[in-house]
Length: 202
Image (cartoon, rainbow, N blue to C red):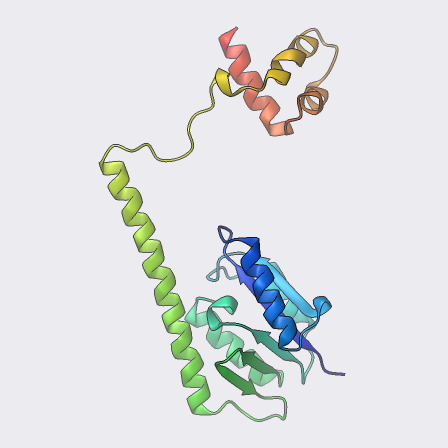
């Protein structure tokens, strides 16, 4: 029995609400909750875990649905590889309100469809590159104006009060680092960071 698989992707800085919207529309396109693969990753990333899982699950006659070409990839090279896979494994790709490529009957992709989806991929890649350049330019300009880039340095004032409360127990050997983190309600890596700050001030 053939299945309809959906793929939803957001960049790591996008909101979960956007993925929820994608999932809702993919359900309307025939996918099920069990066959929708969701990912938070760049569209240019080559090795995407959820996309790889989806591709591994596909059988001849299955359908992939997504909302935009750019959700699958923002790389023209990857897109061309996907088109070849669709043809080779006799799959169907449906881009909502845009394009359907059906190779389930063993037919090849018609030249117009192949050209359309490739051009869409080129524009997705161009948009990604332009966004990257804008970010780099903005950081360069900010740096030139004297803005400090990166995260602000953690100081003794940032150390939680709970850490200071339980620190004497650690210092006297009553508790270890992991227990200090648990009692202070902080992560294990933060324990090391705060210990370095506190002990440097002592």
